[in-house]
Amino acid sequence: MIFDTDIFIWIQRGNYKAAQLVDKSKERFLSLQTYLELLQSAKNKKQHDHTKAFLIDYAFKVIPLSENIGHRAAVYIEEYALSHGLRAADAIIAATATEHNMQLCSSNAKHFKPIKELNLKIFKA
Image 1: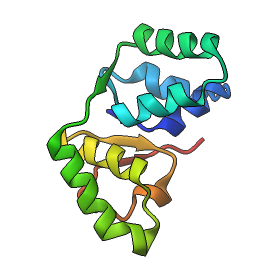
Image 2: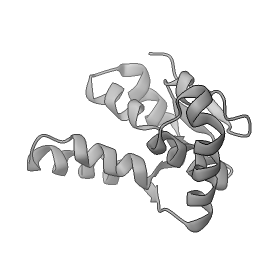
Image 3: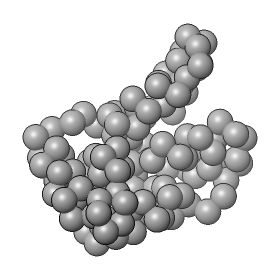
Image 4: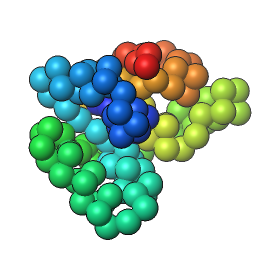
């Protein structure tokens, strides 16, 4: 399963259900986009280190960008940006999940619901 950035935010806020969801997952992935967002949101080096340690401790694998992911993300932007407000970061995350035939877990249904071929698991806090 690929986890969206918001799942990590729920965990940082102490949400037990989000932590349990990650803990019960056999394989844990995140897109490079999510990794960058997590590091960017850190307020200092200590938070950077804490984020990286968490990802290592829970054996998360970061899926890098590829030409296919980039192409699919561009298609999603063309198709859904004007009609549904899809943003580039979410398009990259969705494209990563779709290209790797993985389920994406997010609490942001609004961001991803329009993408029909995306296997989306909605997390409710």
